[in-house]
Image: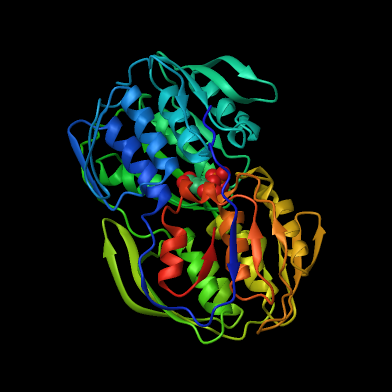
Length: 449
Ligand code: S3P
């Protein structure tokens, strides 16, 4: 089980407007999938712009343990020689995914379709997260858990299916991780594997499977859902993958620029997949000034340069069906809401309770610690905004609970609040956004260790 050796507190303070052109690191979801699909493909996959954060590095190690050849050939440039669908070998040691639910759950799916046995583990945060959501569908496919910690958690040992069965599966939560695990397990099954989701979640797995040569159909299901069908036993062919900048990382400088008066920032190459842009839609409804200055397409994913200028924000109601398209962005949206005029109501946040921390509680605590009034009503989070300018008191010490996004959100808040905001541990930021502090400092942020 991995752990960070040192705890690294960090403080953010007000320091004038933010400016410049920033490129945040590569998208985490796409980076994870590029390594996993590269490992399941025949031939060489060349990845550029890979996120070299701890979560993705852990997945790269797991792919090597399962038999793929992985090589870093330059900054963000990685090559993967895959083993082919169903070709993973039994790893000699435990697969350690550190802090990453996505890495762990997607690889559980991929292993479930192979005739091998593997043990999965992670850090104290990942050991608290539910894994039954993956064990249940992969059992239908024919995989068998041999040992599972209490409550369906890590560490667990999974025996993959010798003869995987194609299934039709309705996901119990709007989760791209569940959908992806089922599709990856279904790769080795004969015939069609179908996943039905009542609310569409990010579709990077479907897009990338197609890019590698699989036949994947996707159609609307009800008002917000999708039905995805994968034809099993495709020959996946090693491919080139260009990883765009991560919109979930761009969210932090974006909100910082909106709430720090006088800011004017350009964020380059940000992925604009419509299933990931819920935050931008919400911020615009709040009155944000976010301009698309250059839009283009790369490797099947839309991307754009965004110009963000400080703006007066107003509270809004964020409907529950929007949650999947901004599920990782609620903590930083809550910060924007604290600096807005009026009340913001975020509905349907149940899934936030099972992220790297109980993000629902952690987000509410982060705001309360800094003098912002918050209410929790069932699965809804209500933030009473203080208005534009330095009306948010700040001055709090925020408990990050091994959660990178709580750490970055709290630091963004400190850039515009009356008094500095301190986080107990910024070390986990390296799971998704290595270089966060330096990049923010290059735009003018006052962050001190
Ligand atoms: C992810 C899916 C989401 C998200 C996570 C990345 C993915 O999780 O929170 O950061 O890459 O598939 P859920 O599938 O649990 O919603």
